[in-house]
Length: 397
View 1 (cartoon, rainbow, N blue to C red):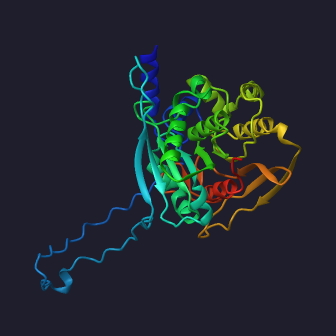
View 2: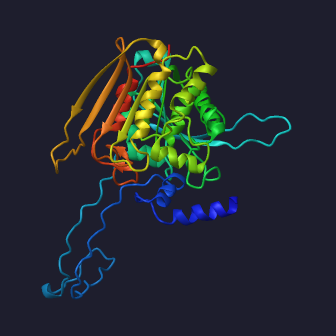
View 3: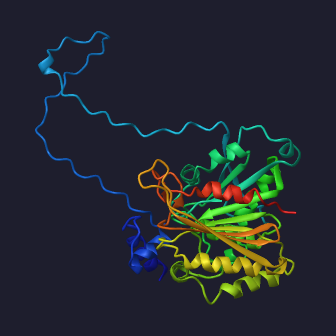
């Protein structure tokens, strides 16, 4: 049965990364990768008569004398893609390996990358350490691709944040998907245990402010970030989920697909009830939820259910007040395109507990990212900036 399922999934993976409407191709979006917005195909150029080739230039410095009529026709210069300037900070590689247990084989290790900014820390950071942001990539992404697509390191450099990028191994999942739908992982084991180990290791080795550790992710990475925030609230000061599945459902591959498409209505309240039963004095967990309204891979119903879970989780903290505001789309064809988006803010007193960002026309992609990479939409709002602005309001007391 396992072999047959594997062959079936491999067959679906050949279909490609573009978003599909059929159920079979949506399976691929879970087990292969979140579907990216298809790029427009270049129009074929009309055939023209072959032009005479220019005479080859000799290696000597002097140019050969060539009659004007024999010269090659001028070639239109095409602008080369801009290469981003390298960042001044350090891009460090490391790994976390769980401690050896007598009588058991060594567990798998988790590779990660760490960006340490070059910017001089403020006086407060010298005393307490730098804030740490943990970024969890989606399916079919590497840590470095996620860093480049989100441009998070550039913002972190300006604000003095360290940024940790755990990377799922191909041996654990052939498409680097975090197993957010696995029951053991939802209970704090599996991938979650390894990521927490990596966070603890970095926080112990680098000058990190333990009261300002934040975690966020995209798609499957958002599902994992949510699990870690729920299972380790003493470690995480706030959580950010971009296009993430609701917590507590799945428990298998087909079940995970159902969650992505329909949410987990039967588990929304019960899953949070189990978390609160395990930790009755659950501390406040601020959250920002970002979702594209045109996302057909992880549909918007997941964001609505995640918002309900957040309010249930924090209901003992006090009375919640709500405010809302809408920003219109930017002018078409402008240098800084932006989708229209609505923010719903939930406050307890003066504390911003929950921010729900609904972005019109955004499909399954990082908002305001580098569109030259998969799973990124050039049009704003800038999700990376939204996340850092939200996290700056919170610390773990």
